[in-house]
Image 1 (tube, one colour):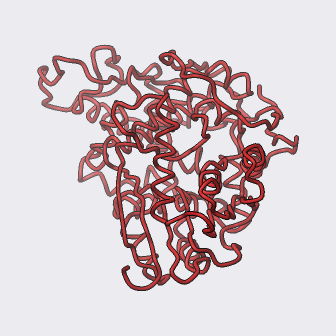
Image 2 (cartoon, one colour):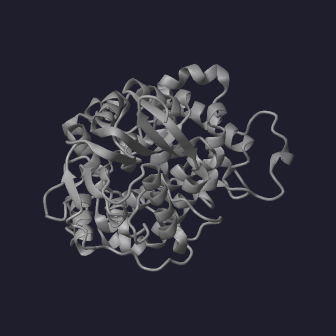
Length: 465
Protein backbone atom coordinates (compact mmCIF):
# COMPACT_ATOMS: atom_id res chain seq x y z
CA UNK A 1 0.00 0.00 0.00
CA UNK A 2 1.50 3.33 -1.06
CA UNK A 3 1.96 6.37 1.09
CA UNK A 4 -0.08 9.58 0.66
CA UNK A 5 0.97 11.46 -2.46
CA UNK A 6 3.37 14.29 -1.67
CA UNK A 7 5.46 16.82 -3.53
CA UNK A 8 9.21 17.06 -3.14
CA UNK A 9 8.62 19.59 -0.37
CA UNK A 10 6.52 17.03 1.50
CA UNK A 11 3.16 18.72 0.89
CA UNK A 12 0.15 16.43 0.58
CA UNK A 13 -0.94 16.19 -3.03
CA UNK A 14 -4.60 16.90 -3.87
CA UNK A 15 -6.87 13.86 -3.60
CA UNK A 16 -7.92 11.93 -6.67
CA UNK A 17 -4.47 10.85 -7.87
CA UNK A 18 -4.29 7.12 -8.24
CA UNK A 19 -1.00 6.43 -6.54
CA UNK A 20 1.32 8.18 -4.13
CA UNK A 21 5.06 8.73 -4.04
CA UNK A 22 7.44 9.34 -1.18
CA UNK A 23 9.14 12.74 -0.96
CA UNK A 24 11.92 12.98 -3.54
CA UNK A 25 15.11 15.10 -3.66
CA UNK A 26 15.43 17.77 -6.27
CA UNK A 27 18.78 17.34 -8.04
CA UNK A 28 19.25 17.73 -11.77
CA UNK A 29 18.15 14.30 -12.94
CA UNK A 30 19.99 12.48 -15.68
CA UNK A 31 18.71 9.06 -16.83
CA UNK A 32 21.18 6.23 -17.10
CA UNK A 33 22.25 4.49 -20.30
CA UNK A 34 19.78 2.81 -22.55
CA UNK A 35 18.17 -0.20 -20.92
CA UNK A 36 18.08 -3.71 -22.38
CA UNK A 37 14.95 -5.20 -23.86
CA UNK A 38 11.91 -4.64 -21.67
CA UNK A 39 10.83 -7.43 -19.33
CA UNK A 40 7.34 -8.83 -19.23
CA UNK A 41 4.56 -6.55 -18.04
CA UNK A 42 4.15 -6.83 -14.26
CA UNK A 43 1.22 -8.96 -13.21
CA UNK A 44 -1.33 -7.88 -10.66
CA UNK A 45 -3.64 -9.84 -8.38
CA UNK A 46 -6.97 -8.28 -7.56
CA UNK A 47 -6.47 -9.00 -3.87
CA UNK A 48 -3.35 -6.81 -3.94
CA UNK A 49 -5.06 -3.79 -5.52
CA UNK A 50 -5.40 -0.81 -3.17
CA UNK A 51 -9.17 -0.32 -3.09
CA UNK A 52 -8.89 3.25 -1.80
CA UNK A 53 -6.63 4.41 -4.62
CA UNK A 54 -8.02 2.22 -7.40
CA UNK A 55 -11.70 1.63 -6.55
CA UNK A 56 -12.83 1.09 -10.14
CA UNK A 57 -9.95 -1.28 -10.83
CA UNK A 58 -10.24 -3.31 -7.63
CA UNK A 59 -13.90 -4.14 -8.14
CA UNK A 60 -15.44 -5.06 -11.50
CA UNK A 61 -18.82 -3.38 -11.95
CA UNK A 62 -21.95 -5.25 -11.05
CA UNK A 63 -22.94 -7.41 -13.94
CA UNK A 64 -25.81 -6.39 -16.18
CA UNK A 65 -26.45 -9.70 -17.95
CA UNK A 66 -27.80 -8.18 -21.15
CA UNK A 67 -25.06 -5.57 -21.49
CA UNK A 68 -22.40 -8.15 -20.62
CA UNK A 69 -23.78 -10.56 -23.22
CA UNK A 70 -23.82 -7.83 -25.87
CA UNK A 71 -20.23 -6.89 -25.00
CA UNK A 72 -19.15 -10.54 -25.17
CA UNK A 73 -20.67 -10.91 -28.62
CA UNK A 74 -19.39 -7.61 -30.04
CA UNK A 75 -15.89 -7.96 -28.60
CA UNK A 76 -15.57 -11.55 -29.75
CA UNK A 77 -16.84 -10.64 -33.19
CA UNK A 78 -14.45 -7.69 -33.54
CA UNK A 79 -11.36 -9.50 -32.26
CA UNK A 80 -11.99 -12.51 -34.46
CA UNK A 81 -12.61 -10.36 -37.54
CA UNK A 82 -9.41 -8.40 -36.88
CA UNK A 83 -7.36 -11.57 -36.26
CA UNK A 84 -6.51 -10.47 -32.72
CA UNK A 85 -7.59 -13.65 -30.97
CA UNK A 86 -4.49 -15.55 -32.08
CA UNK A 87 -3.66 -19.15 -31.21
CA UNK A 88 -3.12 -18.38 -27.49
CA UNK A 89 -6.37 -16.58 -26.79
CA UNK A 90 -8.91 -18.61 -24.78
CA UNK A 91 -12.08 -19.46 -26.63
CA UNK A 92 -14.00 -17.89 -23.75
CA UNK A 93 -13.08 -14.42 -24.97
CA UNK A 94 -16.30 -14.15 -26.94
CA UNK A 95 -18.50 -15.49 -29.65
CA UNK A 96 -16.85 -15.56 -33.10
CA UNK A 97 -18.56 -13.62 -35.83
CA UNK A 98 -21.16 -15.61 -37.69
CA UNK A 99 -19.76 -16.96 -40.94
CA UNK A 100 -16.10 -16.32 -40.09
CA UNK A 101 -14.10 -18.96 -42.01
CA UNK A 102 -11.39 -20.99 -40.30
CA UNK A 103 -8.92 -19.65 -42.87
CA UNK A 104 -9.31 -16.15 -41.36
CA UNK A 105 -6.45 -16.92 -38.97
CA UNK A 106 -3.28 -15.56 -40.63
CA UNK A 107 -0.42 -17.89 -41.48
CA UNK A 108 1.97 -15.57 -39.62
CA UNK A 109 0.41 -14.73 -36.26
CA UNK A 110 -0.03 -11.03 -35.57
CA UNK A 111 -0.51 -9.39 -32.18
CA UNK A 112 -2.78 -11.37 -29.88
CA UNK A 113 -4.99 -10.39 -26.97
CA UNK A 114 -5.25 -12.98 -24.19
CA UNK A 115 -8.05 -12.72 -21.63
CA UNK A 116 -7.42 -14.18 -18.18
CA UNK A 117 -10.80 -13.31 -16.63
CA UNK A 118 -13.46 -13.27 -19.37
CA UNK A 119 -16.36 -12.52 -17.02
CA UNK A 120 -14.76 -9.40 -15.50
CA UNK A 121 -13.40 -8.32 -18.90
CA UNK A 122 -16.83 -8.35 -20.56
CA UNK A 123 -18.62 -6.89 -17.53
CA UNK A 124 -16.28 -3.90 -17.54
CA UNK A 125 -16.68 -3.28 -21.27
CA UNK A 126 -20.43 -3.84 -21.09
CA UNK A 127 -20.74 -1.26 -18.34
CA UNK A 128 -18.08 1.34 -19.21
CA UNK A 129 -16.97 0.70 -22.80
CA UNK A 130 -13.39 1.77 -23.55
CA UNK A 131 -12.83 3.01 -20.00
CA UNK A 132 -13.66 -0.52 -18.85
CA UNK A 133 -11.30 -1.94 -21.48
CA UNK A 134 -8.41 0.09 -20.03
CA UNK A 135 -9.36 -0.65 -16.42
CA UNK A 136 -9.46 -4.35 -17.25
CA UNK A 137 -5.85 -4.12 -18.42
CA UNK A 138 -4.88 -2.25 -15.25
CA UNK A 139 -6.52 -5.03 -13.23
CA UNK A 140 -4.49 -7.70 -15.06
CA UNK A 141 -7.59 -9.32 -16.58
CA UNK A 142 -6.06 -9.34 -20.07
CA UNK A 143 -2.61 -9.10 -21.62
CA UNK A 144 -1.01 -9.06 -25.04
CA UNK A 145 2.21 -10.31 -26.57
CA UNK A 146 2.28 -6.97 -28.46
CA UNK A 147 0.23 -4.34 -26.65
CA UNK A 148 0.86 -1.43 -29.04
CA UNK A 149 0.25 -3.79 -31.97
CA UNK A 150 -3.18 -4.82 -30.63
CA UNK A 151 -4.09 -1.21 -29.87
CA UNK A 152 -2.92 -0.06 -33.30
CA UNK A 153 -5.20 -2.57 -35.06
CA UNK A 154 -8.11 -1.47 -32.89
CA UNK A 155 -7.36 2.22 -33.57
CA UNK A 156 -7.26 1.58 -37.31
CA UNK A 157 -10.77 0.12 -37.13
CA UNK A 158 -12.21 2.22 -34.30
CA UNK A 159 -15.05 3.55 -36.47
CA UNK A 160 -16.35 0.09 -37.42
CA UNK A 161 -15.78 -2.01 -34.30
CA UNK A 162 -19.50 -1.78 -33.54
CA UNK A 163 -22.01 -2.66 -36.30
CA UNK A 164 -23.73 0.42 -37.73
CA UNK A 165 -27.24 -0.48 -36.43
CA UNK A 166 -25.90 -0.55 -32.85
CA UNK A 167 -23.89 2.68 -32.92
CA UNK A 168 -26.90 4.64 -31.74
CA UNK A 169 -26.57 2.81 -28.42
CA UNK A 170 -23.18 4.43 -27.81
CA UNK A 171 -24.65 6.58 -25.02
CA UNK A 172 -25.12 3.40 -22.93
CA UNK A 173 -21.32 2.97 -22.70
CA UNK A 174 -20.11 6.56 -22.38
CA UNK A 175 -20.55 9.37 -19.90
CA UNK A 176 -19.97 13.10 -19.97
CA UNK A 177 -16.74 14.61 -18.73
CA UNK A 178 -16.77 15.59 -15.06
CA UNK A 179 -17.52 19.26 -14.49
CA UNK A 180 -14.73 19.32 -11.90
CA UNK A 181 -12.13 18.65 -14.61
CA UNK A 182 -12.77 21.97 -16.38
CA UNK A 183 -9.67 24.12 -16.79
CA UNK A 184 -10.64 27.14 -14.78
CA UNK A 185 -7.59 28.74 -13.19
CA UNK A 186 -7.97 26.54 -10.11
CA UNK A 187 -8.97 23.51 -12.19
CA UNK A 188 -5.99 23.87 -14.52
CA UNK A 189 -3.59 23.91 -11.55
CA UNK A 190 -5.17 20.78 -10.11
CA UNK A 191 -5.17 18.97 -13.47
CA UNK A 192 -1.52 19.80 -14.13
CA UNK A 193 -0.54 18.61 -10.65
CA UNK A 194 -2.28 15.27 -11.20
CA UNK A 195 0.04 14.47 -14.11
CA UNK A 196 3.19 16.59 -14.19
CA UNK A 197 3.72 16.71 -10.44
CA UNK A 198 3.66 12.93 -10.00
CA UNK A 199 7.44 12.80 -9.52
CA UNK A 200 10.38 14.28 -11.41
CA UNK A 201 12.16 10.98 -10.81
CA UNK A 202 9.35 9.04 -12.49
CA UNK A 203 9.73 11.03 -15.69
CA UNK A 204 13.53 10.84 -15.52
CA UNK A 205 13.20 7.05 -15.40
CA UNK A 206 12.05 6.89 -19.04
CA UNK A 207 12.89 10.22 -20.69
CA UNK A 208 16.27 10.97 -22.25
CA UNK A 209 18.82 13.25 -20.51
CA UNK A 210 17.17 16.39 -21.94
CA UNK A 211 13.99 15.54 -19.97
CA UNK A 212 11.91 16.50 -23.00
CA UNK A 213 8.33 15.17 -22.82
CA UNK A 214 7.11 15.80 -26.38
CA UNK A 215 7.71 14.33 -29.81
CA UNK A 216 11.26 14.15 -31.07
CA UNK A 217 12.29 14.47 -34.73
CA UNK A 218 14.60 11.65 -35.80
CA UNK A 219 17.18 11.59 -38.57
CA UNK A 220 16.56 7.91 -39.36
CA UNK A 221 14.27 4.98 -38.52
CA UNK A 222 14.08 2.75 -36.62
CA UNK A 223 14.85 5.17 -33.82
CA UNK A 224 17.26 4.25 -31.03
CA UNK A 225 17.23 5.49 -27.46
CA UNK A 226 20.80 6.74 -27.74
CA UNK A 227 19.67 9.05 -30.56
CA UNK A 228 16.67 10.44 -28.66
CA UNK A 229 18.44 13.43 -27.07
CA UNK A 230 19.77 14.63 -30.43
CA UNK A 231 16.32 14.07 -31.96
CA UNK A 232 14.76 16.23 -29.24
CA UNK A 233 17.30 18.97 -29.94
CA UNK A 234 16.50 18.72 -33.65
CA UNK A 235 12.80 19.29 -32.85
CA UNK A 236 13.56 22.18 -30.50
CA UNK A 237 15.90 23.85 -32.98
CA UNK A 238 13.29 23.64 -35.70
CA UNK A 239 10.77 25.45 -33.47
CA UNK A 240 13.34 28.08 -32.51
CA UNK A 241 14.14 28.58 -36.19
CA UNK A 242 10.43 28.89 -37.04
CA UNK A 243 10.09 31.65 -34.46
CA UNK A 244 13.41 33.22 -35.55
CA UNK A 245 14.84 33.07 -32.05
CA UNK A 246 18.35 34.45 -31.87
CA UNK A 247 20.57 36.88 -30.02
CA UNK A 248 18.46 39.44 -28.18
CA UNK A 249 15.08 37.84 -28.97
CA UNK A 250 12.45 38.35 -26.27
CA UNK A 251 10.90 34.87 -26.07
CA UNK A 252 7.81 33.77 -24.16
CA UNK A 253 7.45 30.01 -23.69
CA UNK A 254 4.05 28.73 -22.56
CA UNK A 255 4.64 25.33 -20.95
CA UNK A 256 8.14 25.03 -19.47
CA UNK A 257 8.49 21.28 -19.17
CA UNK A 258 11.83 20.72 -17.47
CA UNK A 259 13.46 23.67 -19.19
CA UNK A 260 15.30 22.25 -22.20
CA UNK A 261 13.79 24.58 -24.82
CA UNK A 262 14.42 27.61 -22.60
CA UNK A 263 18.04 26.52 -22.14
CA UNK A 264 18.54 26.05 -25.86
CA UNK A 265 16.97 29.44 -26.63
CA UNK A 266 19.13 31.15 -24.02
CA UNK A 267 22.23 29.57 -25.57
CA UNK A 268 21.30 31.46 -28.76
CA UNK A 269 21.30 34.71 -26.79
CA UNK A 270 17.53 35.01 -26.25
CA UNK A 271 15.93 36.48 -23.12
CA UNK A 272 13.36 33.89 -22.07
CA UNK A 273 10.27 34.07 -19.89
CA UNK A 274 8.79 30.59 -19.46
CA UNK A 275 5.46 29.77 -17.79
CA UNK A 276 4.29 26.59 -16.04
CA UNK A 277 1.67 25.52 -13.51
CA UNK A 278 3.75 22.55 -12.31
CA UNK A 279 5.65 23.34 -9.13
CA UNK A 280 7.80 20.23 -9.54
CA UNK A 281 8.77 21.11 -13.11
CA UNK A 282 9.45 24.73 -12.20
CA UNK A 283 11.77 23.77 -9.33
CA UNK A 284 13.84 21.36 -11.40
CA UNK A 285 13.88 23.67 -14.45
CA UNK A 286 15.28 26.47 -12.28
CA UNK A 287 17.97 24.15 -10.93
CA UNK A 288 18.96 23.03 -14.43
CA UNK A 289 19.00 26.61 -15.72
CA UNK A 290 21.17 27.75 -12.81
CA UNK A 291 23.53 24.80 -13.28
CA UNK A 292 23.94 25.79 -16.94
CA UNK A 293 24.80 29.37 -15.97
CA UNK A 294 21.69 30.75 -17.71
CA UNK A 295 19.79 32.15 -14.72
CA UNK A 296 20.39 35.72 -15.92
CA UNK A 297 18.72 34.93 -19.28
CA UNK A 298 15.78 32.71 -18.25
CA UNK A 299 12.97 33.46 -15.82
CA UNK A 300 10.71 30.57 -14.84
CA UNK A 301 7.30 31.79 -13.66
CA UNK A 302 4.68 29.69 -11.88
CA UNK A 303 1.88 31.37 -13.80
CA UNK A 304 -1.25 30.60 -15.84
CA UNK A 305 -0.94 31.39 -19.55
CA UNK A 306 -3.98 33.66 -19.18
CA UNK A 307 -1.92 35.89 -16.89
CA UNK A 308 1.13 36.26 -19.15
CA UNK A 309 2.61 39.74 -19.08
CA UNK A 310 4.50 41.82 -21.59
CA UNK A 311 5.03 41.73 -25.35
CA UNK A 312 7.51 39.38 -26.96
CA UNK A 313 9.27 38.97 -30.29
CA UNK A 314 8.51 35.26 -30.28
CA UNK A 315 6.10 32.93 -28.51
CA UNK A 316 6.60 29.15 -28.43
CA UNK A 317 4.25 26.59 -26.94
CA UNK A 318 4.96 22.87 -27.26
CA UNK A 319 2.11 20.38 -26.78
CA UNK A 320 0.38 22.73 -24.36
CA UNK A 321 -2.87 23.27 -26.23
CA UNK A 322 -3.93 19.68 -25.50
CA UNK A 323 -4.10 20.55 -21.78
CA UNK A 324 -6.14 23.72 -22.27
CA UNK A 325 -9.56 22.20 -22.95
CA UNK A 326 -11.93 23.19 -25.77
CA UNK A 327 -13.82 25.68 -23.59
CA UNK A 328 -10.62 27.70 -23.17
CA UNK A 329 -9.07 27.57 -26.63
CA UNK A 330 -10.42 31.07 -27.31
CA UNK A 331 -8.59 32.32 -24.19
CA UNK A 332 -5.42 30.46 -25.19
CA UNK A 333 -5.18 31.99 -28.66
CA UNK A 334 -6.14 35.41 -27.31
CA UNK A 335 -3.25 35.10 -24.84
CA UNK A 336 -0.86 34.16 -27.66
CA UNK A 337 -1.95 37.15 -29.71
CA UNK A 338 -1.82 39.51 -26.73
CA UNK A 339 1.76 38.45 -25.89
CA UNK A 340 3.06 39.08 -29.42
CA UNK A 341 4.95 42.25 -30.25
CA UNK A 342 4.36 43.79 -33.70
CA UNK A 343 6.04 41.62 -36.33
CA UNK A 344 6.46 38.73 -33.89
CA UNK A 345 6.08 35.04 -34.62
CA UNK A 346 4.37 32.17 -32.81
CA UNK A 347 5.63 28.57 -33.12
CA UNK A 348 3.32 25.85 -31.85
CA UNK A 349 3.71 22.10 -31.58
CA UNK A 350 0.36 20.38 -31.23
CA UNK A 351 -1.04 16.85 -31.30
CA UNK A 352 -4.09 16.74 -33.57
CA UNK A 353 -6.92 14.40 -34.49
CA UNK A 354 -9.69 14.49 -37.09
CA UNK A 355 -12.40 17.07 -36.49
CA UNK A 356 -15.28 14.60 -36.25
CA UNK A 357 -13.31 12.44 -33.83
CA UNK A 358 -12.46 15.53 -31.78
CA UNK A 359 -16.14 16.47 -31.46
CA UNK A 360 -17.00 12.96 -30.21
CA UNK A 361 -14.08 12.95 -27.78
CA UNK A 362 -14.93 16.41 -26.44
CA UNK A 363 -18.32 15.15 -25.30
CA UNK A 364 -17.02 11.92 -23.76
CA UNK A 365 -15.27 10.94 -20.54
CA UNK A 366 -12.45 8.72 -21.79
CA UNK A 367 -9.90 6.43 -20.15
CA UNK A 368 -7.21 9.04 -20.86
CA UNK A 369 -9.24 11.87 -19.31
CA UNK A 370 -10.04 9.72 -16.25
CA UNK A 371 -6.56 8.42 -15.50
CA UNK A 372 -3.90 10.39 -17.35
CA UNK A 373 -4.85 13.88 -18.58
CA UNK A 374 -7.91 15.22 -16.74
CA UNK A 375 -9.44 18.19 -18.52
CA UNK A 376 -7.40 17.68 -21.68
CA UNK A 377 -8.57 17.45 -25.28
CA UNK A 378 -6.57 16.98 -28.47
CA UNK A 379 -7.67 19.57 -31.05
CA UNK A 380 -8.22 19.15 -34.76
CA UNK A 381 -6.34 21.18 -37.35
CA UNK A 382 -9.64 22.82 -38.21
CA UNK A 383 -10.21 23.87 -34.60
CA UNK A 384 -6.70 25.33 -34.38
CA UNK A 385 -7.16 27.26 -37.62
CA UNK A 386 -10.57 28.61 -36.61
CA UNK A 387 -9.44 29.78 -33.17
CA UNK A 388 -6.21 31.26 -34.53
CA UNK A 389 -8.12 33.20 -37.18
CA UNK A 390 -10.62 34.47 -34.62
CA UNK A 391 -7.70 35.80 -32.56
CA UNK A 392 -6.28 37.69 -35.56
CA UNK A 393 -3.55 35.17 -36.35
CA UNK A 394 -2.61 33.61 -39.68
CA UNK A 395 -1.15 30.13 -40.15
CA UNK A 396 1.98 30.54 -42.28
CA UNK A 397 3.47 27.04 -41.99
CA UNK A 398 2.08 23.66 -40.94
CA UNK A 399 4.33 20.57 -40.83
CA UNK A 400 3.17 17.13 -39.66
CA UNK A 401 5.42 14.26 -38.55
CA UNK A 402 3.30 11.77 -36.61
CA UNK A 403 5.51 8.78 -37.40
CA UNK A 404 8.23 10.41 -35.30
CA UNK A 405 5.91 10.54 -32.29
CA UNK A 406 5.13 6.85 -32.64
CA UNK A 407 8.87 6.11 -32.41
CA UNK A 408 9.32 8.54 -29.50
CA UNK A 409 6.56 6.79 -27.58
CA UNK A 410 7.97 3.35 -28.36
CA UNK A 411 11.31 4.34 -26.87
CA UNK A 412 9.65 5.82 -23.78
CA UNK A 413 7.49 2.71 -23.31
CA UNK A 414 10.37 0.28 -23.70
CA UNK A 415 12.49 2.21 -21.26
CA UNK A 416 9.63 2.59 -18.76
CA UNK A 417 8.90 -1.13 -18.67
CA UNK A 418 12.62 -1.89 -18.36
CA UNK A 419 12.80 0.42 -15.34
CA UNK A 420 10.05 -1.38 -13.43
CA UNK A 421 12.13 -2.03 -10.33
CA UNK A 422 13.20 1.61 -10.11
CA UNK A 423 9.63 2.81 -10.61
CA UNK A 424 8.46 0.48 -7.83
CA UNK A 425 11.17 1.93 -5.61
CA UNK A 426 9.66 5.39 -6.16
CA UNK A 427 6.39 4.17 -4.65
CA UNK A 428 4.40 3.46 -7.81
CA UNK A 429 2.53 0.17 -7.54
CA UNK A 430 1.84 -2.44 -10.20
CA UNK A 431 -1.55 -1.00 -11.14
CA UNK A 432 0.07 2.37 -11.83
CA UNK A 433 2.79 0.73 -13.91
CA UNK A 434 0.26 -1.15 -16.01
CA UNK A 435 -1.74 2.07 -16.37
CA UNK A 436 1.32 4.00 -17.54
CA UNK A 437 2.37 1.26 -19.98
CA UNK A 438 -1.17 1.20 -21.38
CA UNK A 439 -1.11 5.00 -21.74
CA UNK A 440 2.19 4.97 -23.66
CA UNK A 441 1.13 2.04 -25.88
CA UNK A 442 -2.33 3.58 -26.43
CA UNK A 443 -0.72 6.85 -27.54
CA UNK A 444 1.80 5.07 -29.76
CA UNK A 445 -1.05 3.21 -31.43
CA UNK A 446 -2.84 6.49 -32.10
CA UNK A 447 0.11 7.73 -34.15
CA UNK A 448 0.90 4.42 -35.86
CA UNK A 449 -2.71 4.15 -37.03
CA UNK A 450 -2.69 7.84 -38.09
CA UNK A 451 -5.67 8.48 -35.87
CA UNK A 452 -3.39 11.12 -34.32
CA UNK A 453 -0.76 13.41 -35.78
CA UNK A 454 1.71 15.93 -34.36
CA UNK A 455 2.28 19.24 -36.14
CA UNK A 456 4.56 22.24 -35.93
CA UNK A 457 2.82 25.46 -36.92
CA UNK A 458 3.97 29.02 -37.48
CA UNK A 459 1.45 31.77 -36.75
CA UNK A 460 1.80 35.50 -37.35
CA UNK A 461 -0.48 38.46 -36.83
CA UNK A 462 -2.68 39.75 -39.65
CA UNK A 463 -1.99 38.83 -43.23
CA UNK A 464 0.28 36.05 -44.49
CA UNK A 465 3.95 37.03 -44.56
